[in-house]
Image 1 (cartoon, rainbow, N blue to C red):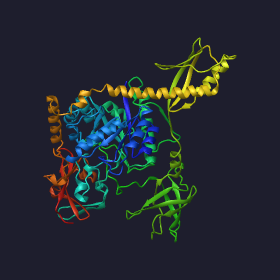
Image 2: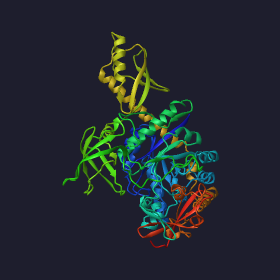
Image 3: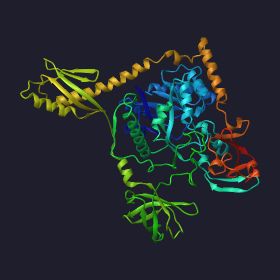
Image 4: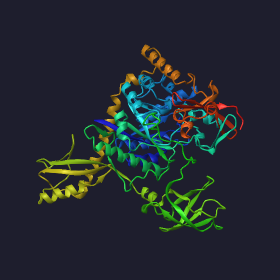
Amino acid sequence: MKELELLAPAKNLEIGTAAIDCGADAVYIAGSKFGAREKAGNSFEDISALCSYAHGYGSKVYITINTLLKKEEIREAQEYIKKGYSVGCDGVIIQDPRVLIGAELPPIKLIASTQCNIRTPERARMLEKVGFKRIILARELSLEQIKKIKESVSCELEFFVHGALCVCYSGCCYLSEYLTDRSANRGECAQPCRANYDLVTDDGKEIVKNSPLLSLKDLNLSDRIGDLVAAGISSFKIEGRLKNISYIKNIVTLYNKELNKFISSHRDEYCRSSLGESRTTFEPRPLTTFNRGYCNYFIEGETLEKRNKHLNSGVAKYIGESVGEVVTTLSSANKHNEIKISYKCYSENNSLCNGDGICFVLPSGVILGGRINWANEHEATVQLSETTDIQNFNNLTIYRNFNFNFEKSLSKEVKRVIPVEIELLFDERQKMRISCGEKNFTFDEECFPSKDKERCAQIIKSQFNKNSGNYIFNVVKISGNVPFYKLSTLNKIRRELSLLLKEDLKRQKISAEQNCQASEMGSYTIPGNFHNTIKEREILQLVRNMHLDENGWRSFDGCSNGELMRTKYCLRYELGCCLKKSTIERREKGGKLLLFNNGKSLELEFDCKKCEMVIKASDKKE
């Protein structure tokens, strides 16, 4: 049976726990340093608590060290890996392969970050060769490209299936550093791809004004699980280590259901990598929590006829789900900045209610919104968040960016339980023997001869068929000379059985770690070992192939060609000017395009043969 893993982000202990409850087979979390999201750090104490909770369901925890390191940080990062392992982490996600040189690492799974820019079979083979057991592929890959990589390696493949998209190939972006002196490769990205730009020709002709031209829609591959499994993906990753708990509950539940649906039709081939069932009281609604609109990116490949549009339509943030439109403005904004409208909804299920958050996109492009103070099926009063001179909201689309009722349903407790079928057998000494699949446990507790064996069996079954810790037992068979037990005794046995099963999970984990080949993990120790010296050379070759500085983190100042980013996303295509699809004026073909932001200019180059766009630093003045 091949195991499939749903991997969720954990901003902190609370959100990581919620992800496990909602069905995640694994979570990834940052410590206090070396994470690609500097605002999502956690103490090792909290990471240890998360590991303990996750392991109760057979779920895993991966710690992130997915930034480029300075030379003086490498030893500290190596100690960081050891500390992560000591508190229970099952794997470490690494961007900078130099952290492997000279390190006596514990038997922890090494995972190559998507920041390693893994787009080719050659890069994948190199990473596997130096010890990585899993590689996280670039988001830009198609199903065919994933298949080719899978054919070339034996390690696990992980792929992003949901969340925000970086416009640049991951790990190759210097735009934030160039514009703001905050390096994306050091976990400090200022998200300049979400900013507004002017697009002009080199002779000053304005094409687009003040628009987020580098801001992509979000990724949603919830309907492509089967295709990704067929291509070789075994870990399905959700982006969002800065997202709130509502987002995590909603989106993890969505993919948990989709994975279970796929497995239910392939029971002889696939299973989940952890245990248990998540019991939620809500249906997931991916449009209801944070998104910038959805796309499937390049999963279909580079064929222009199959490519969908990725550019956001003038808005780089979440404005919400379109639910209806204003019919008439019943009263304009008063001194309390409240308006009253009549409206119509696009469907009966989308009526507005008290506490909803809504917004409008004005003709000028300005977004104006607020909370609903009162609403019925046709009218609503809205407390706007800022003062406005707008008197007429007629015919504007209503976007709901906070669904009060849905958020209320998300706040309810989610239970994750591990169903276990058990059989009870009573021997001639009336000892209770419990069978859970291949596991057997014997309990010798006080009991008494029964006068009504069927009644006693019913009481035993009733007491066992309850939640106990992570487990919910289902007694499928009771046989032998059934005695009478006090209820307190039956409850004690049930609790002890739950603890024994939990300890058995821990033993399985320890056994799996002990079976790791120590020679593979320990072979990064260099002195006095010819094989280790070869390993060091291979890692340094990998560093060179990744265009990293062998001595440590390289800033944009170290780039010789001024290239800030390279991307599969192409502004010519998005704006309907693809040179492969249309004929345009010769002068416009040859003319350069520039982006302007806050007084700084960026020069665009187009590699049409590779279907790539390159953004470079420019000295042009706005």
